[in-house]
Amino acid sequence: MYNGGVRIGFSEPYVAIYSHEGTTVSYANGQKMARGVSANMTGRSGSDSKFYADNVEAESAAGKFTGGTLNLTVDGLSLEAEKLMRGLPVATSLTVGEETVQVYADNDDADTPYVGVGYIEKWQYEGVQTYRPVVIYKCKLTTPDESAQTEAENTDWQPQNLSFDVVRSDKEKRDWRLRGEHQDTEAAALAVIKQVLNITGA
Image (cartoon, rainbow, N blue to C red):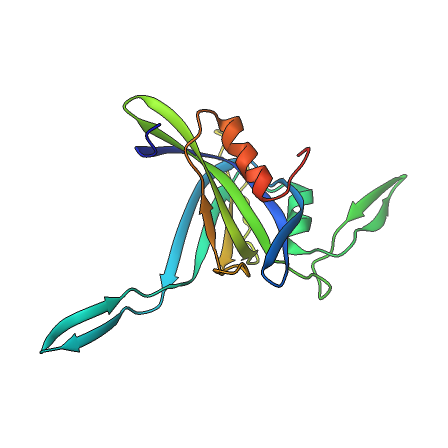
């Protein structure tokens, strides 16, 4: 199988709570966060280190990855995924007439956790489409911007933009991203993501 080509799609963003014991990383409470629209990963690296001898650059060491930003656009977070990623406190009950509604407060009890994020890139090469699983091992959601516009004559689709601060994981070699082999089906790529993020039944 040719593991290249050009990206033509993005789908299936998943998230799970990150934790570690020493250099052993684990995940829990994994779930699908929304329907995927786009993904963009921007990395940061330390400066290259150059050594000069005999009046020329004799050696060079590339700067290592130090962190980055993952920007996802989704149709809209599910409530469960938002609670998970933002570390919202337990819901309280609000009585509205004869009904009881669960509400979630943004307050000092919110404790945004580190999470692992996985998604699928769709690729094409010479007319053949494949699916590549990607997992960002350790990142944290920043407080999302939110906006809404009134409905007009034509539907104005209003997706949600999410930004994550990406850091290196606690694995022995400080892994920060996993990219798997291209798979023949989206289901096969998703199975890789679920295996890495310890997701069952989601």
